[in-house]
Image 1 (cartoon, rainbow, N blue to C red):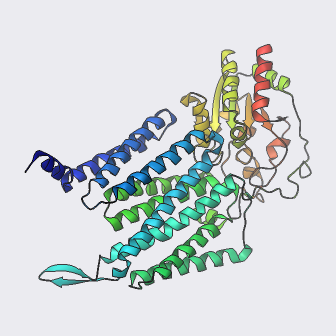
Image 2 (cartoon, rainbow, N blue to C red; image 1 turned 90 degrees about the vertical axis):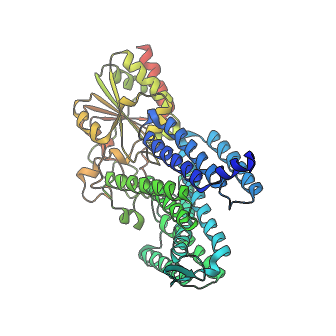
Length: 490
């Protein structure tokens, strides 16, 4: 046997392919570990990317793979679109991109399941029999292949359409407020889920109808829309994380159906980490995941009394950039509290320049990060890391809250609901019980905000009427730059 033939035989051997998969899995896990902090996230992402490249090569080496031309064309198209989109998207639009790319993953899984049904669906419903001491599946593949294929199709379709709705809300193509059918919403969701599961059971049992499979995908698509539409903007970080977990689980199910170790391991890693993150974020908002899926919170629309001080005895006190600069200059300790307003204004670099000016004056500066500030998990961390803010200055909520009592000035930049004392003081508030950044404990508070419009929860912030709070109205980037200029002139 010639050397090229031997080499080809070795490269396509099952043992070599599985060794490549094991290497890929190790890189996946190491890459995920790197994503635990901003300082190692880029390296972790690259390690995971190398692992995925190895997994792709291992899959292509499988002797059963064909249509290399179509595969190369698909990979080339995906690389062109993905790289271009990732390079051009603004940091403020990162949540939309995450939602959209996650949806693409779910949609791909649903399409793969459909293709598999077209190829092997006529053999679903096979049953095992024992022949000569061996178990043989008569009529086609084992039943678990059909079960996992149907599961992947349903969950992948839900993830795809749900992620598109999340993208529409984040991009403000759709209203951020809940869009619901009222009391009938949960009944509709239950009906759609029942229909999707019933169709899946019929397919697994041996109903060889492509029309039924397509109908199942459509019902799952309607369910994905129906689940996410009633969820308001304030819950979007949790929704994105939950849909990400759905995509991972559907990919793992597809891997089981195709006997592809790369899909199984990568899907389970994404599904497990997404599920853990979803739970952590729900706890951070004092909300249960079923309550979030039920919708109705985080509407984004104003409620009665939300536009002014009518519900409060106090009044709103405005300030100027010059007065804010004097306050900050004479402070010993300043805590910056970033929110979505900073992201919208792309003010992270201006904020970093301001804090450098304060640090040059001997002021101790740190950043208090709420776990659901922004529109995706870790949104504020990503923005501040881009502006080269030292990682040790970023304080998570549990670490930041005890420090507010000894803080001279808290500078709140566009963070609304996550600083609202109503979460602690007003039992009738829709956010009551949600853990917040307790900036009201500071000696003084400066809030940079465009207007008195409410946040995504649709309620006014009691902090703004606190006598020690002053409001600096305007675009966050311009306002912060003006404060920095005034500081430099002192």
